[in-house]
Image (tube, rainbow, N blue to C red):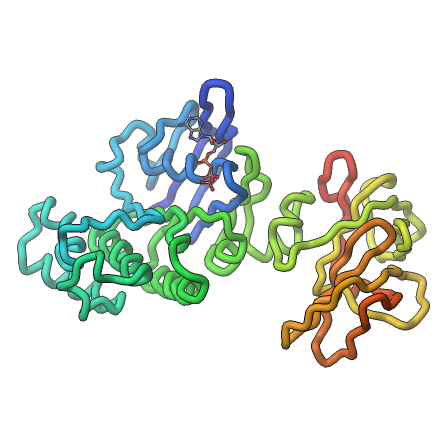
Length: 357
Ligand code: ATP
């Protein structure tokens, strides 16, 4: 059992708040992903949990025991870094056995543990090799193996896939998900990549400028972003925004923007200037003149096989629609009308950028 609890944890450097005070409880067996753009404070948060960084305020607990001031080596935590930090002069076997040797575990137990872990990670044939004789993906698996043999309470991972090429990254992502299922371990994982966060996280903590923007499951962040930043960060291609204003009309919200008028079913907390958020996958081309309409001119067509990405200008704004390849695509320069489908529409207050509908 390894529950992690942060209570009002923060980190301030001289004149700069790297992480503003926050509370967070990570349940046993969670795969928690800290995600956000560069400099948002995710690595600092992970380093505070590992003990490599002292918090400026607050407390950290593992399984109810306070560890805020416990030495990193005594926290029963294993870290997997982006550069793997393997010992270059040791073979794969020795790298994986090292921590157990230090703990004076008997030779036979070390052998069994390393072999079992090597089998789990498909490393049996590489045990006699040195790190320089391994590919990036293999080195990454050794780094993982070295962490696993220690049977830590918690695994911390800081961008462990960032040195892998695109194909290997996708493959290793799947392997990490399987590994998490098999080990039933608590994992705290740092990345700037929203796809990694969406695919691997049981929950995501999305940060910006040292402040947690939203905590939730991947689909909660995708479907119910609390503000414009979250909405734009999660999803590929990203959500797009049109400026305009809204007013209520019976059970509807009327959005009026440049070359765009939408009659949307729903409730909103206020009226006035807003951003309307639409995901490219929720737009479709329409020839019909309806009460809802977005008028645009096609600037670029990208056919990616399974889908066609249609880039449009709508007044002074840009919009992208992702349509099925089976649909007859328009041509560059065509005037088209697009419509949002039944998916929820997101409306953000222009001043606060918070979700209001
Ligand atoms: P990246 O993805 O680029 O690694 P990050 O989200 O992990 O970014 P952190 O490394 O946690 O960000 O840094 C958060 C903020 O704290 C940044 O603005 C960074 O410049 C600042 N910072 C980090 N370490 C120090 C330090 N030792 N002294 C002063 N400022 C620091």
